[in-house]
Length: 271
Length: 156
Image (cartoon, rainbow over all chains, first blue to last red; front, side, top):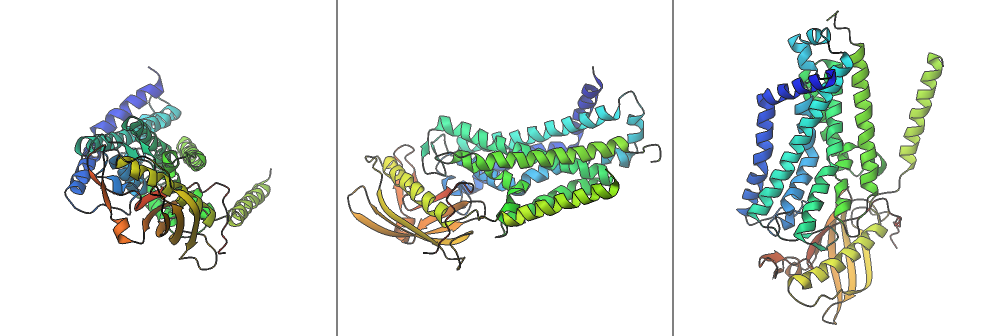
């Protein structure tokens, strides 16, 4: 087994053993059911939210309405909780020196940890998306979906559109995870590793809703998180999504590169 | 390259990026985009309303759509409350001159509804799901492409 695979396997087991990670997965599994349950037991609909008006019409509106909320603060939080202390916890427990003087190199440790965190982040996004979709279909029904262009899409197409919409937020979520890891490496603090990406996400979100320079908004991760609307329109357009994914990739590459360089140069012998 | 040279290059890049950000100031929300998308989405929603009531699907013949920002008093751009007047001939052959409100967010999406509450909150029975739903011809959500070429922001 290669060094990378060894580290990846160990890090996955470590993440899976954490109560926080398990609790997060259960939370993501349960919340969509609570949300649609509460909506169905009240008269009013959240009309101010995209797809809020369709929550009682079709089950496919549930994952899309939840996607609107999730993209604002839940997804950055998921990424931060999973990635924010993956390196700094080694510092705090004094185990970094041990693992870096064993047979695996720093490069393998870095990429193994990164791959494990990204795997769990992807699983978390899939869990909430799948749970919301199943909750919507079971409680509301497998009815056609109205896209944002006003065209009725059959249920068979709607499922694909929902899946594609959730897939588009994966890259910006991973970018938030890369930022959390970078902060975790730079500061050696788990608290900052979790808080900084969340605060950064909220600041980006605040700017997104300000009537300020649109060009700045386009280079924020929060904007990429909402670019899925283009694939649900009639006619479909992809420019916001294509540019947004490029922006997310830039964040991801820069944060990962900084984290990698700093981790490679770290002086573990000196503490 | 010397340290001084690297710093100067970095400063030039930063200044260039800042200048690019400040000069590329075409607004996302323009009158052209709002009018085009509102008319197209209204047409689709109107047809969908008929379809879901089990009636023959017929699109409205739209004569004109005029939208103005009620938030930006200088030019028709930016998010906020917009008013739209749409003139069309309906499936019944009658001429309509309806006023709508669009609440537009900064991301290029909006909630549109008729200013007539009887139309806005009108409910129909969906022939497919047999559920009572809000009439799509009275209120709907929409989104537009903020990168398309419809950059007109004239108030006239």
